[in-house]
Image (cartoon, rainbow, N blue to C red; front, side, top):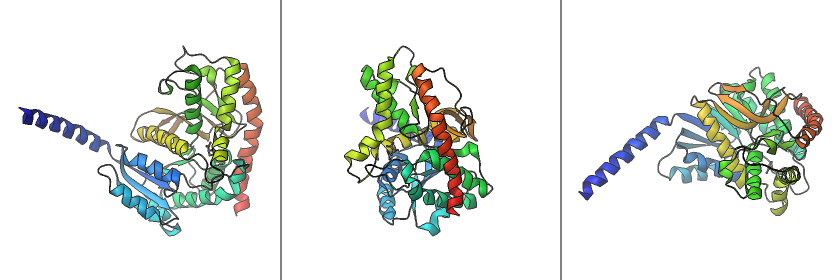
Length: 340
Ligand code: LMR
């Protein structure tokens, strides 16, 4: 009898695994996979049933160790490592999604903006490889300063004749994660139950959490709380940088949020229509690029973020953000000339 029950359970489990296996048909490349963020993101992806092949790229040859470790784990996607500039094109070839996590992290006292010079060359190399080998891929970049680097990457791709604005994403999901988590603490509720749209960009003066649009609608944030929570979200990254004494910036929270973003985008790649917070080409607010909840499907962006009803405080933040973001976008685009 016991054996029969075990066989039944085993058969059910096998059926479940078969269903999951059928869904595994997506290839993802992680660029910068030997870094802390890259390793955590790769580990998350090793557990993702939507992924069939995982390509890990880094200039650092320790990536081979990461590949071996992940390959030692049972199940999940096959894992291959690619090392150094000459293998970058191969690393992204045929991938449905290319995720860029390589970056020089900022030090205490640095702003994200100050990382432009250090990080733009990494983005340029990636764009060149994508132009040469995989123009169809969804490209998602988490490298700072995002406000500048997505316009920069878009201009580089445009110059290579293969810019597809509907497949270029700045990963700003961390601002949503932080907003949800701070609101949940303030209201003593479960963060998993709530959503907070965050619009603008990803820097101290451009992140605009829309607490007045908190869902479910029965939760309410008072204006004085909104002010305090906005400050917390805007300063969260800088506070982590300070406490890590220059060794790193946010790695765990970034990896967690990048993974959540990837998981949603994978659903889009697999044919669903999804909504995810990200920074993309978007002229609905008077700048060329803008972050917010974005509707995405299998061919890329379906609908960029549009206007929201806003509190007086949020409108004030938006009015202050627009000129700053417009300037940063322009500087990002112009930086391409500087690199030539
Ligand atoms: C963050 O918000 O944590 C990231 O942008 C990393 C950083 O430098 O703050």
